[in-house]
Length: 275
Length: 312
Image 1 (tube, rainbow over the protein chains, first blue to last red):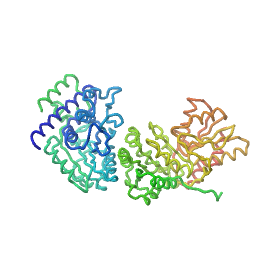
Image 2 (image 1 turned 90 degrees about the vertical axis):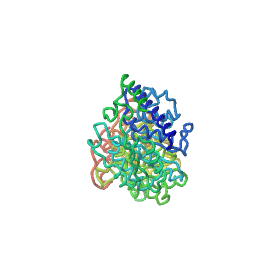
Image 3 (image 1 turned 135 degrees about the vertical axis):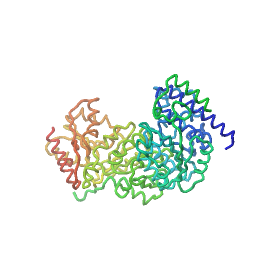
């Protein structure tokens, strides 16, 4: 990746992270930690990888994205708004009564949201259904799904993985946001889903492990996923929960908590400094 | 009665899917390792490329159906009622109901007429569960003709539909020229002035027989087929409440949350009237031949007759 592109993506990711903390601060609730850990991958997907058109969000031939870890809706909304699906100024209405920006993704009311999600474990199955539809119709759109590393403790994830591997859905790419933290603690202390790559390999996936904040590695992984035929790909992205905000990084306490006014100011400053 | 044609509505489901598949290219059928029992194997034979066996993973099947529907397919997700409404309840609620996706659920082996498999597989709670999901249409057909009509009607609805089918072969009762199936409209099968029986599913046929015995005792019985539990036909219920002295609901389902509850809700809010609910009375089923179980649980014509006589 050339320096110019990388700089553009980093700048975009920084704006998306600011949008995340702004939205969660305004909502006085929500999930900043996992939103910040996933922000670089979301940025890459929506600004480089996916074949999408914000002016035509229902294009039947578009690529699809399912946020299986639906609680990081702030990351999705911030990304969609910065990509042009709706005004970034609406981010401050997150979780407010009457706003279309629901606490978890709502496909009925939010432009660009391809699937309602939020109840953990369910999104991947829907993504598998979309990938299957493409195969049935002989279409070449691709489907991306993002799961949390805690989320994969849900059994339905593995039902979906079994089906995707068995059906050789090579138009499906699953990203696991491996920030190592869930609500009750670190994932290896709560109910460890490790080793993650081996599990997806066993279910017939092409598995790529990367640093989820390194745009060169992200680009390389999605290129490999696209080139892989005969099996779905799982990208296991090692990330830092709360990435970019000093006091949130690697703190499971910031899984589902909003910054107060003072913390919000620090967060915005951190995101400038960390650019 | 040997000349009466009997067909299980699960067979009707399989046959109707084939007919629908011929007309509509976007129909896909999903199953969870029960194609031989749910009768989607009939569709699989005709359209193997449009039949998707998801294996023994009902939650995932519902999710896949949701995803398919967002891409223009009209999926009919099929398994036993126990697993469609029970095990996958939250997937139906969150992945299908909440986004109001165009997913059809074909739930077979409902009620105690599952028979020998026993209580673990006899779902008497599915209507109750499905009724709570906003936007869900629930159809419980009474015979082969109605089951086939229900499948066609479900396709035409833009949104989720739960269809309830049975394992037991039941008499064809709607084989008349002016039969018309309309979602949300109860069917007046027999007029009467003393009492009204509101029945659903296989209990419609049993109720018609029970009505004959009641008539022989000098009781004038109105019989209404409520094939659509949700949205319920309020008008036909209120009219019956006004024109007859007592209402009886009959269903092969728990008296909690099913047709009986739906009718009670209408009466309580629109036109309070005496009601007695005939159904599975807050208990689990058990193993045994279906016909024997229907008799034991007083859900055959004789049991319905007896319960009505005791609760006049």
